[in-house]
Length: 396
Image 1 (tube, helix red, strand yellow):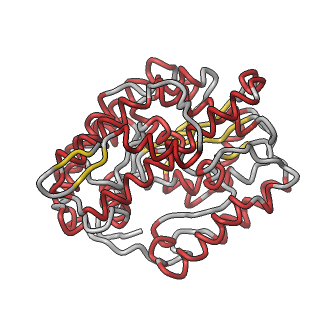
Image 2 (cartoon, rainbow, N blue to C red):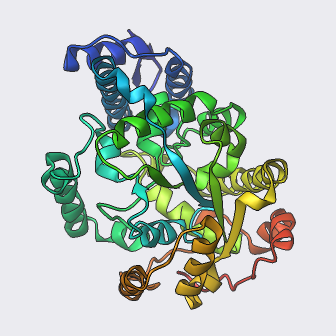
């Protein structure tokens, strides 16, 4: 089955599911809750067909088949290893905030801490079989991801300037949420899907994420997880439903600095042909509106969850004194902070200081982002957290 539009062809959900079943030889997807997100995403692609080429749609839906295939493998593994249901993730730390506020740097440096279990990109992409501590260094999935990262550094060096890519550090859980088709998905210009995602609860998505986390930790301790994702701010209480003992680090920076940078990164990752078909000013406004809603939701939710479970970290303070801010985090979560760990973190910080990998060049004007309008739109947030206002001309 296909969804025909005047411009292109979008596969129907069952067609993608059939491909996944043929690829794996399996047929049990587990709970059908993923269908809601899959149907919505495909419908929104069809509704906004003018923003896509057929090559772009094909790349997106090939990714959907991969996620459906992984879901089949996960459910099959659970069927063979029901004891995994008894696994318990422990005391997770969640790093979140506006995109481009240092969440990646904070997650990477905290990934050095041996007490944390990291959501590594190579195991998120293919969770089955769960990794084993004794053999993971030479795991084919890890080596394959390493080769892809090295190729990206050669062929797309600008991506390594824009964003940290580390093989064994915590990365955003997008591949896990895509198993439920409830990832934020701002690297595709489907504005209708973004609005749909924002309006719907994420309990099923985070429940399934936890299901995969239990699988991943089943053969590879420790069980105290480190998560990182700016999109958590939209559904904090749904996240807490899956992880009742979670604690949160919220990173802060002036939105006039973060929004253009995020827009530049996102649009560089659009499907083939979409960047030329999308109004950058429209996308810039969409991003600003989206993040303003996210900040309001974060503020409302943390008031209900309880301020004692949140720690605020400001970007300029972290850049000036990373070890001081890390000491605050260790105190917040009640972990010792030994000298050996501190030394390793100092080394990482020195090697990855702002600008160490090159300069990310962009302008707010590219995306129709106006300083005065952003100041007014986000005043509720910058005032509440005493966020230091920066000069728009500084591009980092």
